[in-house]
Image (cartoon, rainbow, N blue to C red; front, side, top):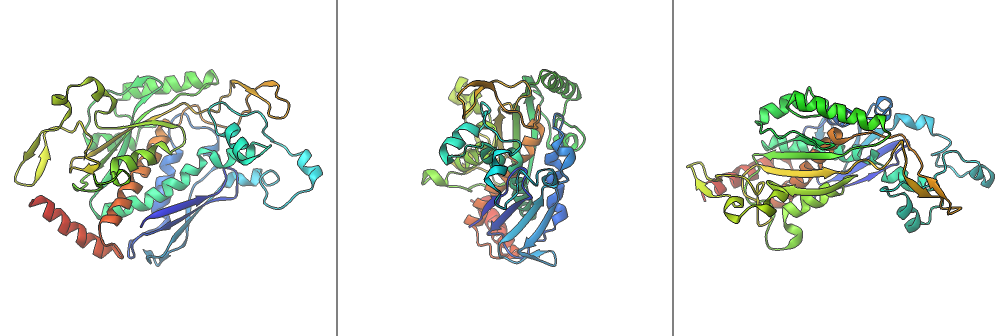
Length: 388
C-alpha cells in the first residue's frame, strides 16, 4: 500500500517526507525530484519567499546507489528562510519572560485561513502555531511525493501534465494538443498557451498586487495512457475519481473539482454528456470525453481530465476586518508574506496530487514488490483489456 506522511512548519528548519510502498529497483535521484520542486516555485505573482528558498531534495533513506530498496523513502527539503526565524521557531524551551516579548505573535486571525478555527481546536493563544503548519509551504512536500510517483508512472508510459485555464476571470478558452501545452509550460510563467491571454493574466495579477489583493483561478490536469479499469464501482471509497477529488480539494486554497465537461454537464442533455463507445481494432475507445476518463468510478481508457478551482489566497496586504483573540477588539487581520496569485504554482501541486493517486491505485491493483514485476503485470493487463 502506498502512503506518505509529511512533517515540518513553514519557517521551520525543514520539510520531511516519508513514503512507504514504493517498489524496489526504481531509479531515483534527488535531482529529478528537485526539478519538479523548482517548477512549483515559479509562476507570475509569487512573493519574495520563492527568491529565498532554493528547494532541493536530499534522499535520506530507501535508496542505495540510485535505486529504491522497497523500504520507506525519506526525503528532506531544507527551509533556507529558517535562519531568519531561529528565535521565533526554535524547538528548545524558553523562559516565560521571553515568551511575553516574543516577536511575530499572531492574535489577529486572517479571514479565510485556518488561524482562528485552528487556535480554537488546539487551544493555541499564539496563532502562529496554527499558520506555520497550515501554510501552503507544505505543498512542497506533496510535490516531492508526486515527483517520485511521476518517475514511476513514466516507467509505465503514463504521463501527467497540467495547465492554467483561468486567472482572476481571464480565461484561456483554446483547445490545444498535448505538445502545445507542454511547450508553453516550459516557457510561459502563467502556464497558458495563448500568449495574448497570458499577458492579460499578468496584467490582472499586477492590478491585484497593486491593490493589496489576491486572485484565484482554475487549473486542468490531464493523465495520458491510463489503462481502463483502475478504481472500482463496488464501494464508495474505491472509486478513483472520488479519491482524486479528495486529494485535490485537500490542497491549500482549492475549493472545487470536476472531471471532463465538469459543471457544464448540469446544463447539457444526456445525449450530449455520455461518451459513445467504439471499437477500432486496437481496443475500445470513446467518441468523446465529456466524462473525463471515468465511468462508474473507474478509468475507461480515455485521458483523465481533472478541473480544479483555487480560491484567492487569504493573506491580503490590504487586510479585512478581524478580531483580536485576546482583547476581542476589532482590528485588521495580521499580514504574513504571501503571493498575490499562486495559480500557476498550484497547477504543479495539483498535477502531483493526481500522480500520487494514480500511482497508489496502480500499486493496489498489481503485484509491485519490484519495478520489473510491476511493469510485467501492467503489460499483461493492458493486453488483456485490449483483447476483451
